[in-house]
Image 1 (cartoon, rainbow, N blue to C red):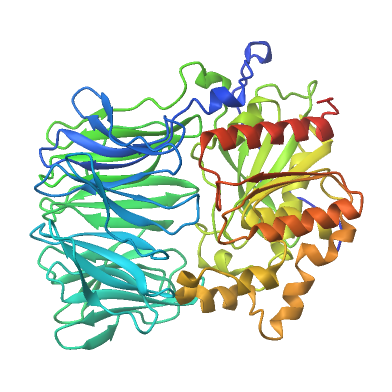
Image 2 (image 1 turned 90 degrees about the horizontal axis):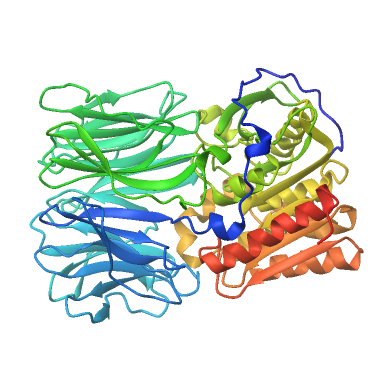
Length: 626
């Protein structure tokens, strides 16, 4: 790869409101992690409570929240592993939740009985299970499990109260189960071809017949059935640049478009009796929500949540209430409940630490710049309040995971922590990122660490062109694939970035692609199609783009953070790159968490690791003594 500086053509200069720098308070990492993260939000049968997950105890536990007054009741009290709420068990006082062990991603489904006792419903030692809903009569639990074959997920059901598994579909062909009709007859199945292409099928159990829904090459994802099972819905980019919603008549095979926009349809579903359709649009890194009343055909005019990115919604069984999960760049996700009957919305949670003034945080801004070949690269930019031409600040290029992920405008505590302490952050959506059309998404196939890395360097050049950036002190940071990009930048373009922070990133593609978890089998060939097959001639290219084998080129300081239980990027990856850097006398700091996996979830670990990141950056980008 060439170590060169690329001409940057600035597309536009956004305008930021600047807070008085003398009034900006810098907060500790402990204060940032006094914020609360939440998830879930399933309605109780009487629709008076929501079942949710929260990490206010330090790790995730299960809580109930009262819709009328927002009061919470902690249901579980785990000290070691995070528990994530699934749902209430219909007709009982029981609850389902999921948990793994130390971040190993072997999730089990647990039943918490009304008397406080717990039963593991999927007890196989290496059994990975996923909740898949309830039967139409609410008598059965559906779930996916790989207990028969570690490589493939079969579809099971259990009768409530009996909890004995019954197989509904044996997945011998290694397809991905994507949904089932209410009458249990039609099963939606997906077959990955590449990471940007797949096939979609409907399998008729009564006739043992497979019907292909997909037509041309493209992306296809199941989006549920109508109440009567006469319609099947799917999202595709077939013959289009962006994903749109389609309807398939299960009797006639006729197809018709349901909704299309100038951005991707992210997800869509129907409420219990098909009264409402929910559609989420990924509009330039932010989800926009559309609700249509299918009876009247009208689009609902929802109350505005300024700056909110709505990540998830759920409509109650009565179709009177809707739960929304929404964050802004200045505040973590909160739960809201909207009442269709009076058009009122109620905020149920306040997840931002009250010690933090949101005005001291910064709003994410979408910017664009041209890369080396003129391709326009979108990015999310965070400008510190402290930054000015008279007070230039160091900067970081942030690279998302994936490789086909997307940096978005929602809240991220680590980014806000670093920006609050005077670091500008540019979260790039390099070619290969999702959300900007299928052409852009495919641009990095088998070119990883090459043209996408040049996009990242062009982002650094964009930062250098800003008058308030200290252009001599710019680093790179990223997790997972972003961690790989960090190490690729530090290795193959060693003069570009002054420091690199690698969070559980790949450094040896040959090992990583050979050692992916067995339950990724249905996705493995698609991954090999995009990244390269380590068992063929692609191994040469994979060797050449693996930082581990070229670590002698690294010149500038590196920090590595790793979870010991990571099943995707094994600890040995980080061990070996750190060993090589030390051997070459490159300054390197290494932080290992014995009780984490691929991504850190325990507050005490995030506090420890992210505090050390700031100290590392201050040392090498601000010349501050520790």
